[in-house]
Image (tube, rainbow, N blue to C red; front, side, top):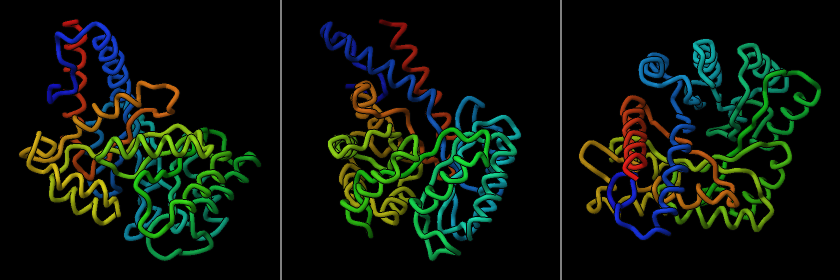
Amino acid sequence: MTDSITAEKGAPLSSRARDHRQRQTLEAALRQARYEVLPLDGTAAQVLEHVPKDVSVTVTASPRRGLDATLALSETLARDGYRVVPHLAARLVVDDAHLRETLQRIDEVGIADVFLVSGDGEPVGDFRDSLGLLTAMHRHRSAGLVQHLQRVGVTGYPEGHPLVPDEQLTEALRAKQPMSTYMVSQLCFDARAVSAWVRRMRQSGISLPLLPGVAGVVEQRKLLRVAQRIGVGQSARFLRKHRGIGRLLVPGGYRPDRLVRALAVDLADQTGGMAGLHVYTFGAVAATEDWRRTALERLAGSTDDG
């Protein structure tokens, strides 16, 4: 198989048909990919310069910058015409009144999608986890507090959580499912780990569609630091193991070609419930968008060539 996201020519007809479907699936996933960005000074300018308006943008939340930074950037990008998905971190929401204010702010700019996480650090108020925040938010939505919100995402953990047992994570997902629309996976580099986890979740009765979380074009050392910090141990080991072979890591940074090509099998299998890609840019917005655009051009070229 080639190093780009295209399939080899000269394959048997059945393989060609399979590859054609996977190319179509990858093209759709890349066109519908969403970028995760950081609420930092200059991020809005980066997005405006490099990201097309048909790409959704999610805005992270952190204890250091607070929830207001997330909301402010989300409001700016929404007014500029982007489909924006603010991250609402439970531990950054003070109380029910703060939650109401937050929901009203995002509703005023027409935001239709939010992504809930528990967040890092100590809680600033009443909410300790995303299930508690989701339950309160669902109550407000049912009461008609917001008009535009249609989609609510929650986190999935294909490689587990460093502090929470797998059984507890599964039970939490089961409780969140009736109030949620989709899942986004933690950062992952091993497609097999994602596929195996999706199968386990389906067997456990979790049917929410999954957006696999993949890294964009990011400097290698930074990516390894992030992977180790957030606890994706198996993927961090996988990344280190493949550092010197096959261009998984290349001069200039990590490129997700191999991973998204490996995920194409599950993305093409509509019964598995994988949908789209959630791309962690880690600030490398321009490089990641250049990669996506180039990948789409290669896919279009391979289709034109038959």
